[in-house]
Amino acid sequence: ALSSRGTLVLEAALRNALLALERALSEQQRQRGACGLWDVHQPASRTHPSSRLCPPGSCGRRGVPQANGTAPRGRIMGGSAAPRGAWPWLVSVRLHGELMCGGVLVGRSWVLTAAHCFGRNRNELAWTVVVGDHELGKPGAGKRAVAVRRILPHPKFNPKTFHGDLALLELAVPLAPSPTVSPVCLPSGSAEPSPGTPCYIAGWGSLYEEGPAADVVMEAQVPLLSQETCQGALGKDLLTSAMFCAGYLSGGIDSCQGDSGGPLACEDPTSHHFVLYGITSWGDGCGERGKPGVYTRVTAFTDWLSLQMDSAPGSREPSCFDLLAVAQLPPEQQSPERARLCAFYSRSCRAPQGRASCARLAEETCHARTRQCGELGDKPGLGCREGSHFWTEDRVTSLPLSRHCASRWGGRQLPPFAELFGVVGPQLQDWVEALRTVAGGSHLVTTWDREQLPGEMQLFLQVSCPGLNASAARVGAVRDLYAWVLRVPQADLAMTFQEILVDLGSKNTKGLYRAQVRATVGGRPTAFTGLVGLDTDTLARSMPGLVALALEALKT
Image 1 (cartoon, rainbow, N blue to C red):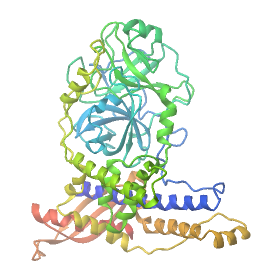
Image 2: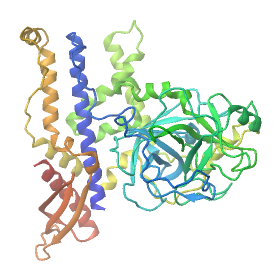
Image 3: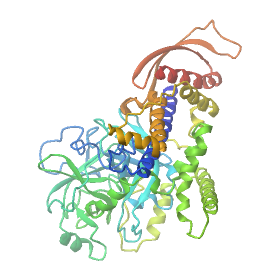
Image 4: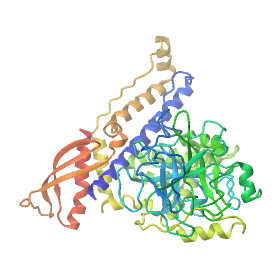
C-alpha cells in the first residue's frame, strides 16, 4: 500500500512538472512569434510525444511470437486464450472500475475505442484505462490503471445507426512502450487489405451470446469480407461506407458482447507490423450463421484522428480532469494555471465586448464549468445494465445489439477525482507540503541553450525582444527546478519500498518508531531513516513523511 501511494505522488509530481514546463515553452514560442522568429528552429511545445505514434518502426509489434499456421485457431466467444502480452496495444476501458469495453493504444497518450461504450456517461472522471491487462481482476507484470483526461467521441457518431462509432481517449499521463504496452500502427492512407485477408480480433467479451465475460484475453483470426458480401448478409440499410464486416458466414467465430472498442488488426506482409483497420462495433448475435461481425472502418477517419491527436493543448475546452487538477497544484501555481485554462472561454466573446468584460465573462464561464465538474465527480456513473438498456431502447428494432456491457467486473469502485489524493493518506496537506518542500529546495539556475544566432541578431533580440530572453530564462529555470523528476524514465516512474527495519525501543510520544527504510525511487535504490507507526492509525499518519523522505532522496 505504501509503494502504490508513493507511486501516485511521484506521478502527480511529474504531471505538475510537465504542466509548468509546457506553460514556459508555450510562452517562449509566443515570444518567438512576436519577434518574428517562427522560422528559427522552434522548440517543441511538449517534452513528450503526446500525439500520433511512437518513433517509426516501434508500433504494431507483438509481444510474443505468433502461433504457427494460418487456419482459425479459436474464437473470442469460447475459443483460444491469447498468450500473455500477445496484443500489447489491447487495453480495457472501465467505468468506476468495471469492465465496459476494449480499447486500442494508438499513441503514448491516446486510446481508440467505440463511441457507443460511453452511453450517457461521458464524464472522464468516472473512466480509467488499464494497460498491460490480461487476466481480469488479477495483478500482472506491466498492468497499470491510467486516468482518462478527455473523451472525444466522433462528432458524427449516430447512436441509432452506429455510423462513426469510434472515440479517442486522451490519457492523463503518456505511457512508455514496453513488451506488454505498446501502440498499434494506424493506416497511413485509405488503402485496405483485400477481402479474404486474415486479420485478428481480441478482447474479454462473452464466450457465447448472453454469456459471461472471459477471464483472460481471447483471440481469433477472421477474414475480411467484401462490402457486397456484407451488405448481402446484413442488408444495405444497416451498413454504411464507414463500416465493414469480418468473420465467417458459416458462423461460430466472432466477437461478442464486451468486445466493443477492441481491435481488428492485420499484419503488414512487408514490415510484419500490425496495422489497425477496424474497431469492434456491433453484430446481430454472436457467431450466428450468415451474420458476420461489423467493425468501424478506421481508414475513413484517419484525418479526424490526426487532427485530434495533433491539436495544440490550448485549442480545446478544458476537461474536468484539467480543471479539477488545478486544486492539486501548490497554491502559488493555481492562479496562473487556472487563468491559462480559463483563457479558452474568451474565444466566445463577441467583437463589441471590451477586454475587461470579455475576461470577466470567460472567468465566470470557467468557474461554472469547474463547479459542474465537481458535481460530476460526486455522481455515480451508469452501471453496465443501465447503459445497455439506454442503447438498446433507442435503436431501431432491426439493428443488432452493440457489443459492450458483457458483465460486471468485480473490481473495487474508483473514487471521484477530488478524492484521488484522499485515498493515499488521511492528510492531503501533508502530500502538498511534501511536494512543495522537495521542489522548494531546488536552486533556480537560469541557463538558456539558445541557437547560435549572428551577433547582430543577438543584439537586436536584447534590445527589441526582452520578453524572449525572459521567456527562455524561464524555460531553463523550470527545467532546473523540476530536473529531479523530469529525468526519471517513464518506465521507472514508481516508488517501491522493499524493507522497513523498526527499532522497537524508540517509540516517541506520538506512537512512532525510528526505522531504517530501503526503497527504489524513480529507478534509483536509496536508504534513509524515518519515523513509522505500527498500528493502522499511526502507520497512516507516518506515510506522508516516508514518501517525502523518499522524494528528497530522489532529488539529491
